[in-house]
Length: 244
Image 1 (tube, rainbow, N blue to C red):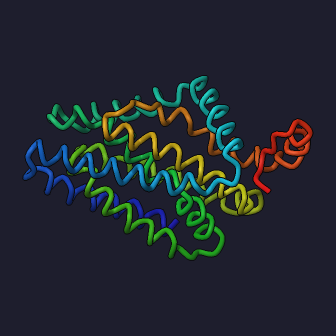
Image 2 (tube, rainbow, N blue to C red; image 1 turned 90 degrees about the vertical axis):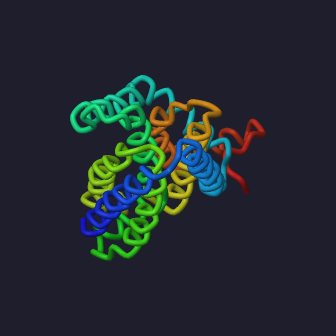
């Protein structure tokens, strides 16, 4: 858990620095910073999405995951947590209007990615938290940039990091046994598609219900495990699921 605790600390410190800086930025400059974050988020999401070896499998993961996520109301649940935290801690602060957006956006950005999965497993199995320490550094700078534009809600994403990464670390033995490189690659690609959705949201181009697609991160490795059987069936139809 050491790596996760370091990550939580860097998010809190980075957010605090961003809040201090953000107070001195004009609304126009905050908007420009937010647009820059949106563009960079699109770039990161695209790079992650390109990890897929099977666009059809990635599409299936997103669609099935989206259906499950909508059935479970994940978007509303995550936003409800954000609103509860806002009511509990924002204290009528004018930044409260962006509290939920900051919390949800930062939570997804900090927790969807290969370094989260691999770093947590490595920390849990061997106690080596080097990968999570690197991620923590990146998240700290990202938290600074996000909080400068989106406010204090970003800081509370540290709670999401603690719960999610902590669970992965504690269950590392099980996840290490179950997850193959191919599964992690497809999980990364599906996560990249979600990151693209966040980028569109930050740029005010499209409000994608990103949290609803979170089950896709579970569906993806399941489909990889089933892909030999499914691929054999689809090959008969002339529609290969995986690239040769």
